[in-house]
Length: 545
Picture 1: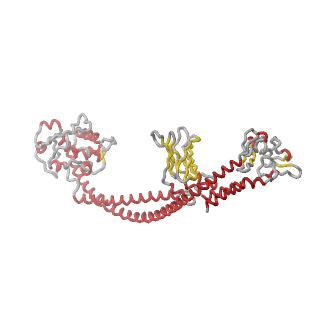
Picture 2: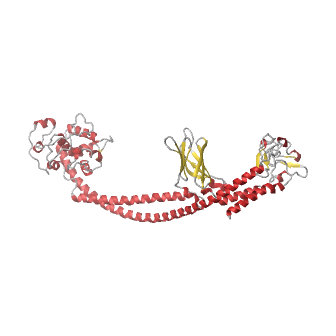
Picture 3: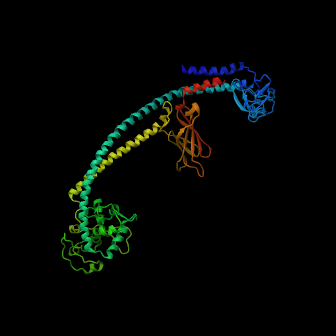
């Protein structure tokens, strides 16, 4: 029924153009449209006012091939005024206005030949053009009829997407409130666990500091030991930031205190006095006294630890060979140890005064007892694990809140986009379409971005990001603008205009660059098949005719 109506409408327009207009004959000067005819009527005294009101001239001076009015309104039928307009009636087709400069120039600009004299013998092609235009309009009407069905499907999907976004937004609002309450609870548990952990670790560290202070004071490290510590510090500090960190110690298998083949974080932190990193001074004072005995053991050198009141030591014996290498004498326990050497092909470059790394080796329990107590006592370890669990639980809740906030932000951005009065354009959001020419592959992702990429390989260049609709008047949704693209070399930022037309399937039909860094896409989609707008346009043409 609707298709038949459109066919009848087009036939009526065509018949009206052929017959109805021909019956209208309102006296007016040559080149004046029917609409402007009342403006070209003489006054009782035979005078006539220029349309802009700037001058009054005799009515007989209209079309006298001399430009009297500043706006050129007195010469609509000649080429005397450069700014004048000549109206082509074009009976049987669509009337148009052309510049007066094209009148009587030897070129037939009007399809009815009215812009030239009869001697020029311009052929009247208006009837044929009108018939072709009628066929084109009929084809367009059929296209809009079919496309409107698909457009309606897009409208239904768009409205469903909008409802889904609204429901999802409400769901996320409820979830984030629940997670915020849970976050407060987890934060309280974390604070309690960390307080207990901090108290236990501080007590343990205090014990270690007291022991280390006694050891450091008793040893009174000579200058050679400080130099050795400095060289070792430099070797450990692989990233050259002036600090030795846990990960930098974990690569030295000499620090594997329990000889299980892995230097754990706890073992590394033990040598760093339970810190994450140390500078040179702290390393020499706190870390080196713990590291050096293991290094000596691995290098085959034995140096006795300084006696402390809390530890018992075996009697010291003279060892002439070791005494020449070290400032202190080795203990009998160390002298009796057998430390096998291993190849270490992955060690970094050694310093001149530093012995090469010979591998992990083996150590007796006496070495561990002379260097330090166990890393943590069971109770301290338990509190640390509880604090870690509380921190992990808190971070998990915080992560979920961040994810919810990110999704809410995306939903709000989508709600802020103009998807048309019926949400028909929202279906295209998230889709991408490509077009290839001889040099580039062009991409259009509606409501997101446009880009180009060389066909023979290379980086993708952003031509613009979604900005706004820029169609004029009732045709607002016929053009999109994408701005703030990558800057041209010594030029402006790239931008793109998307011209949209009705079609049964979405696709890019062409891409051009009429101006530097300004791109034009021709894009077709059923979303542009607005039957009501097309009918209004047909009615407008009928009124014009």
